[in-house]
Amino acid sequence: MAPTISTGRCAAPGRFYEQGAWSKAAPSHRKKILLRLAELTEGHALELAVLGVRDNGTEINMAYKAEPISAAGTMRFYAEAVDKVYGEIAPTGRDVLGLIHREPLGVIGVIVPWNFPLMIGAWKIAPALATGNSVVVKPPELASLTLLRLAELASEAGLPDGVLNVVTGRGTTAGEALALHGDVDAIAFTGSGAVGRRLLEYSARSNLKRVYLELGGKSPNIVFADVPDLKQAAKVSANGIFRNSGQVCVAGSRLIVQSSIHDRFMDELLSVTTSLRVGDPLRLRPDIGAVASEAQLQRSLGAVELAEREGAKRLTGDERILRDTGGTFVSPAIFADVSPEMTWSREEVFGPVLAVTRFDSEDEAVRLANSTSYGLASAVWTGSLSTAHRMVRAINAGVVHVNTYGGADITVPLGGFKQSGFGRDKSLHALDEYCDLKTAWIAL
Image (cartoon, rainbow, N blue to C red; front, side):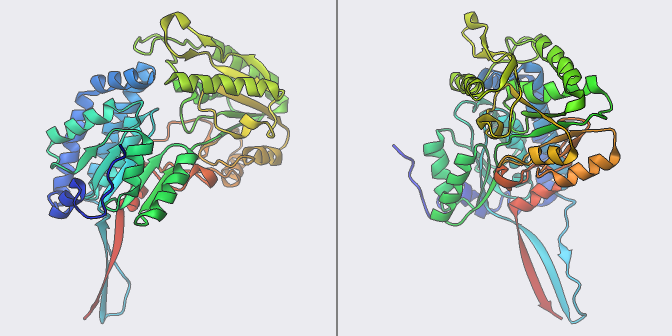
């Protein structure tokens, strides 16, 4: 049975929001509770990491740092920010006082993916709570354990009842009900473009709630001939696509290498890739754990078959391995001679599959980088400061790494251009998504 959709403020989150135990609390009080939640999250980090690995197969070392430890840091960041974000006084004449207040939106719906549900959930939950909103989280049906546990820890931290709510279920039932509900004032979503489009439709069909989307990517990783350290670039590039079996929205899935160093770079990249260890994600030895599900594994294998039919050259990997374990394990794959016209050079695979393309000139590199409908992340490797700055301006992506891939922390925003969406997680800018601006115009 589909969930009942209410249009009145009878649902618990809306009712508790209006009562004001959280929304009208002093920022210093909200700060105290969020800092306690961060402390509890960190204290239960190993438990939370293991719960996550059981759900989605992320290698335990990565899961520990990327999920509970990262989430705790995010909560601390927004807890410390909440009593340091000021309103404004407008520059008016002396006979008028113009004040600009920040008000919480109300009830925020949060829908997150299965690859890093706790980390990505915290990016949305923490700023929403810090600004006084109530939150309803719809965790992924494949990976709900960490967010359910987080709700228990939030209660232990002293968060009032009804302020943080976790509702499990499928996207077609629980997610749809959340997005259509008239009590929900905004949806913050990370996931696929197809679902993002549906959420925009649901907003139009319901109360015109705000929708913040962080969608997929087909991110270019561009290596110029003057790369400062070729071996290091190869090592980081391999990690940039193969960590978590390629199941990362910002994964550098398109490697674009200048022709004059192409062969040397590929030798280094193949050496790194073939040395990566795939295995039981709960053991400390493997570099890469399991693919999250059988369906995701088949999608990755299907992308390889399509690439070979379209003429790409497989250099290594993307074969099902460790069958005797009963797990969903696949080896990292690299394809050379990939043209921008090939299907999976444009479409996100969300698996451990790397497409490699050569380029000669800077203009060609820019054209290749911008040749997809996505614009989430990217990278440029060069020893020239001028080249780096030109490429940062020229690449249509929300994040441009220079001489690295990944590692951007909570202090800077994450979000995309084009069909990678228009929401922004992380940094102080995320607070704006969960507030309304109210003007007070006072005649003196």
